[in-house]
Length: 255
Length: 96
Image (cartoon, rainbow over all chains, first blue to last red; front, side, top):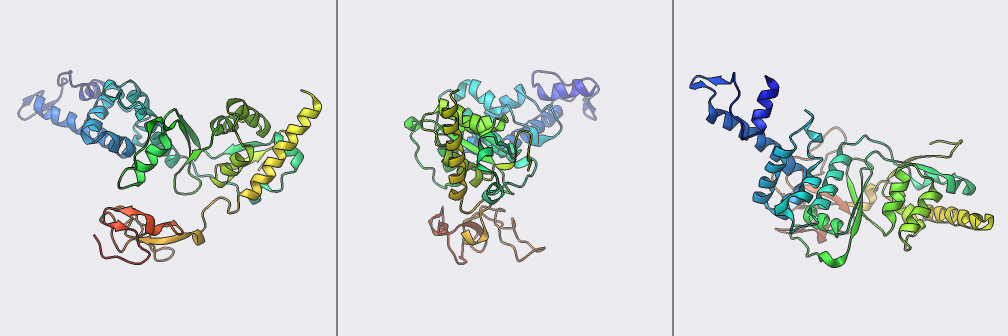
């Protein structure tokens, strides 16, 4: 009964299910439509709150229409609404009317990473002082533990610039799409989610570290991917952004 | 891998690590000393002001860019923040 009801609510093509009744008569279509619309509107509002930059980029009408299609295609799988909207970026990538804006799905990926970081578990970041006692000969074998909120978004479009001007500026700065790709690091070191632009080659470096590679191996991978990779700047950037929560040495110290 | 090459890259990684530690002058969090109170820039409900521990008016501003509500921003950047009513201010404002 509940399953039939839920399916009918989310699919406008379905008729009012058996057992739904009111004083105006059995299976009241118009009343059921009001209920159905409320469900849609509340889920669309959830997405609008989660993807403020997409909303600003495409405008209210386009956003709500696209979000309605998304809700139809991917209704919530969990009763926890803070987890809802994960697939919106993938949906936008395939969404025909959004084709003229190819960067949209990467911006949505960045906004989802922000949401993920916002709800991720707290962990205290390590400072440069915490890392200072590590002996030089141990450094290459060092395995870092990153904060649970850390994620990396890589794009062939200037995704960080698009996101940042739309989230913080009253008047959006003009951005040249041909200016090349940008990568972003999302992390919540304390209470506020921070989004930083990553230097060239950093995506491979941070991803390798996140997968548990040691410092030397992550460095090798980054240099293979980008000859401009600068290890010193990248390590300093990671520490400064508060992305490192611990480290260990294979068969040794753990912090 | 050739042993001498390996030693060289090991040294390079350790050197870069040590240099990176000295590069990070103010580690981790932005300290209060690097921030300033900026009036008239906070969006509705996003102001930071609080009157000491236990009391708080944080998040209580009722309109966007309320002139007597402040938000912490990096030092020296307040008056460069653009709003529809003009730039942010280090002192209270009458707006909107």
